[in-house]
Length: 306
Ligand SMILES: [Zn+2]
Image 1 (tube, rainbow, N blue to C red):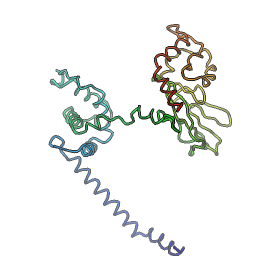
Image 2: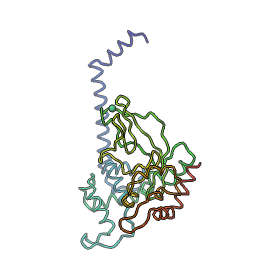
Image 3: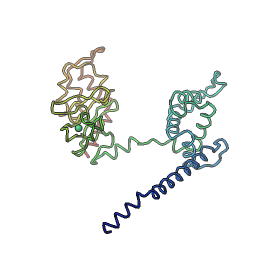
Image 4: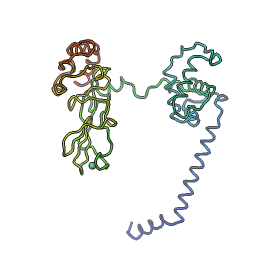
C-alpha cells in the first residue's frame, strides 16, 4: 500500500462518521448483551427441567454472579451431606441447609442478601444439575506432582516476588533470568517449586522472594508485602505455618548452611535450639518431621531426581 493511500485510510477511520458507526455498533452489542442477560436472569429455576450442566451454570451465574456460584460450590463441598438434624429455630430445616445459609450470609458476596429459601433453591439446583462442577477441584494435587517429575518446571508451587511494580519508581519490573528450582518445607512435607526473580533495570533494583536489593544493600519487604515464607537460602524456604512450630531460634545465621542439605536430613536438624514449652531438641523435631513426612520426602526426591 502506498503512503498516500495509507494516509487517506487513517484519515477516514478518524472521521466523525466512522466514529459514530463504531459507537453505534458497540452500543448495539451492549444492548443485545443486556437483553440476553436479562432473559437468563428471568428464568425461573424451580420450573426448569432437564437442563444441561453448562447451561445450568450459565443461568446460575447470571443470577448470582460467577463469584456467587464458586462460593456456593465451596460451601456445598465444605459441609457433609450427613448433617441432617432438624433445627427447631429454623422451622425444622436441615442443619446442613442452615449452616450453608449462615456461611453465605456472612460471605460478603452478592449472595449475602438472599433469603434462606432462595439459597436452598440455588443449592438444590447446583447439586442436582451440576454434579461434575461440584465434584471437580481446580488443579488436582497429584496431577501437579506428576507434571513436575523430571520436567523443566515444578508445577507444585510457583514462587514470585510479592511486588509487580518497582518500589522506587513504580515502573514495570521485568524478568531477565529463566525460572529456577527451589524447595519449600511445609506442614505437608517438602514441596518442589519454580521460582523467579524480577528487576527494575533503570533503578538497578532486583526483587527476590523475601528481599529486594538496591544500591544500599539488601532489604526485607515491609510486613504488608512479605509472603508467608521464611527464606533459608536462595533455594530453600520454610512456610510460615511450619515456622510457627519452630521455637525461638538461637542463631538465625545457622540457617544459611541449610541449603546444602538433602531433604531427608531436613533443615531442622541443624538448628541448635530448644522448644519454649516442651524442651524438644531440634534434632528431635527434625526426626519427627522426617518420620511424619517419610512418603512426601520420598515423593520429593523422586520428583527432583527425574
Ligand atoms: Zn524502578
